[in-house]
Every structure is written in structure tokens, then in C-alpha cells.
Image (cartoon, rainbow, N blue to C red):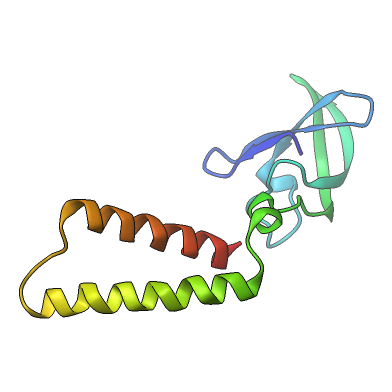
Length: 122
């Protein structure tokens, strides 16, 4: 898969010999709504009015997750989450007293939350 834009309903595949092939969402397997770049697929090709077009497509191998390959070991993430709980507890205590954290601290906490969420979601 070269690229696929689910909101537009199409994308392009590249054959082993470098030919670009149009892929409409209707050619995807049942239940598949989106395909990530790098996914290996098998597909049948027909010549349409605008060139090569995939008639049907089948996912052979999903694209590897870049985030999953770069994330920390689970033990390190557990330590990070324990520290994050302490920081969030401090923020919570301030909120109970009617005080939001200062902008600098709030930004750092938000950045850590996003990073942990990305690691967990990979």
C-alpha cells in the first residue's frame, strides 16, 4: 500500500515492478475500512478509463507499527505511570482547592499524558 485516505475512499497500491494501481474502498475486504501505508496486499488488476485499478484486494501482512517498535519496555512504562499517578494526584489536590496548575506545569503534564497514551495505544 502506497497510501490510502479513508475519508476520500481511495488510495494507491504499488506493484512489485513499481506500477501504481488505483484502489477504491469498495475493493477492500469486507470489514476493512482503512489501510495503512506499508501494508502488503494481494490484488487483481483491471485497466479502467484512467489506468490500472484494483478489482479486489486482500491484506497479506499489516504494516509494522513504528510506535510499537520504538516504545519503552513494559517495566519502564509501569514506572513512568506510577510517577505520573503521583503528579496527577498533586494536580488533583490543587484542583480540589480551586487552583488549576500553572501553565508550564500543565503543559508538561499534558505532554506526558499524551506520550503515555500513545505508548499504550500502539
